[in-house]
Length: 119
Image (cartoon, rainbow, N blue to C red; front, side, top):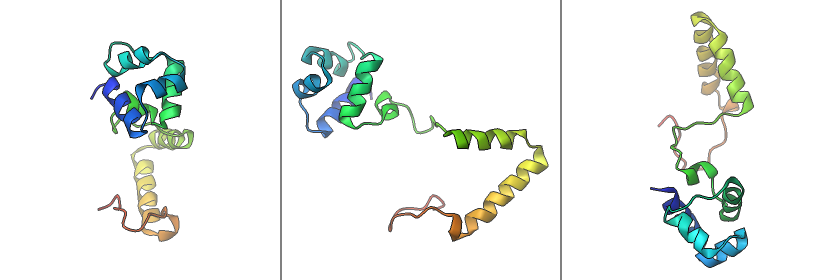
């Protein structure tokens, strides 16, 4: 799916016409139409407005795959610390995490009926 197709889908899911979205974002209807047919691409400022108005995920709108992972500062720090360890240290970290996973005390609450990641 192209950027234009994802943009059009997001717009329609919000129940907006091209004219309505263009007016909210502050661009011409023809410009928005050109985005949706992949003739033009929005600049960063307009892209940010589109994301905000459509309440869309910027990465999804850009077509980034789920494998394109972005980590928080804390997560990146943990990865860096893990990489600094030798093989024995890395194994101990994994063992410790495995021990934590077995305790309900440290698990996030999941909604009833949600599939667990371990399933």
